[in-house]
Image 1 (cartoon, rainbow, N blue to C red):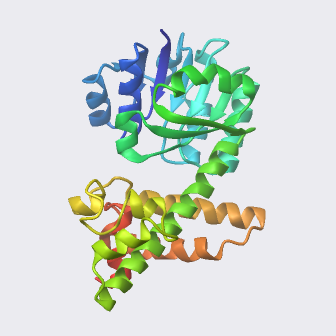
Image 2 (cartoon, rainbow, N blue to C red):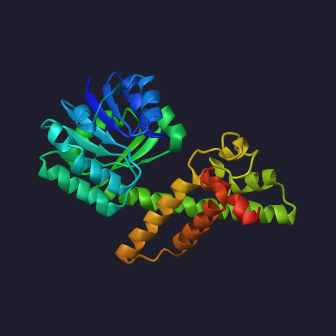
Length: 294
């Protein structure tokens, strides 16, 4: 089995590291939040004093960090690229901007290391159940080297292309998700005003042309989908703050590339307003409360 350094053991990284432990891998973890590290050690992760220490002798280094600046900082300031042996593959599972992802690839290449940008989709539930969808960007050699570790935490793994392609796929996917959740929320809000029951709307839309993941898997009203956060007072799940982050990334990418994303822009503004009204920590499906005006 492999030795893997795992840097960033929060809501997503912690369960992913634990699933790698279950597969028999030796995981050395690092996190700035002591509570995250303590929780991970209870699940079999070994505590490393520094990121560089974790990377010594590692077959893979996995990072799961909040933003592009954090990934670049770890690659440039922690000593992991120098500490890791030849043949170690660097896998950044963070959701970050494409530019930072490509900078990370360049840094790894200069150090003679293989690298992937490999953001994930599926939320905390998917991380716990090892049913995430992973979108990888990088060389075929890096993808093949990382595959044994990535398949241990996912149900679907897609090689999307060269450096930055994984982040591009994640940004586009989550822009679609953010927009579709608002559309579903507007549909249910309108149904309420028209006296149509949520059960009736769900029965029709879930088997008709209004069908989408936001409706059938993550319905924003309680009842029709018992496992959706709406049935648990909108406990995330995928928090509004994280959706807002991804929507902002989509708009930064659109501006940089010259793409027209008018619905993406409108959705980003709505999630920003929702977060500003105190819902940043609630699941993003709680956007229906903003749509209703409550």
